[in-house]
Image (tube, rainbow, N blue to C red; front, side, top):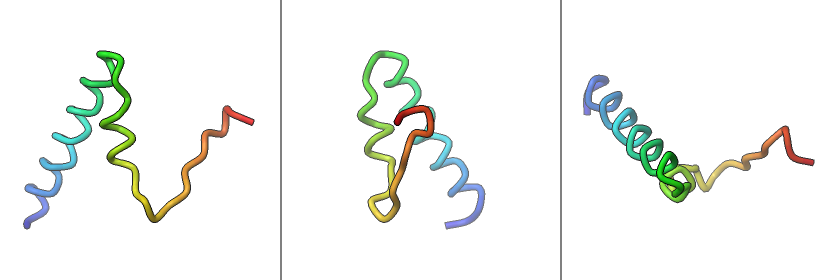
Length: 45
């Protein structure tokens, strides 16, 4: 896979996730999260 293909794939995944988010569905963003990392929201306590 070349750099352009990788970039296009990532952008397509992000666009699809954002479109779903704007329609009230956060699931695609959650599915993009890595299972090997811990995420936190600094605005939450």
